[in-house]
Length: 133
Ligand SMILES: [Zn+2]
Image (cartoon, protein in one colour):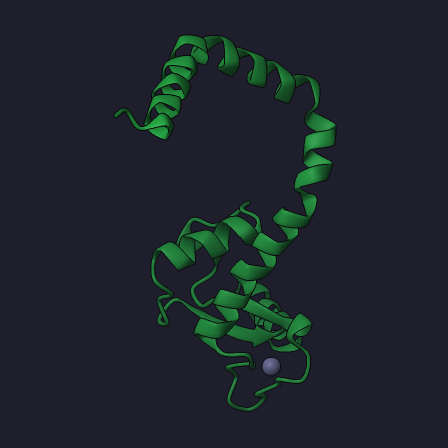
């Protein structure tokens, strides 16, 4: 006896391949004509994705300022990822935080090139770098 589910699966597969090109064309057109609505619909998922990237970075590098004279850890919003040798040295100039987090995660969180600094220490480091120029 032939399994009814198997027959249905085969039919669905056939139907998919028979109409594949047309369906792809239709969904491409739909995405093109509904960009705004789709972007609104994706917003919560995008925000969750970004938050998850930052959580992974903070988990890996610690949730406090790595300046031993500071050690600030009261509010995570005031913690920055610091490029120890500068964004330029890492080729990260002009990249957004999300892209930078993705790269660092892919590199498996190198501890010799990145660390966490609080906004205050990061600002002071920036001023010192400017003063050296
Ligand atoms: Zn600090």
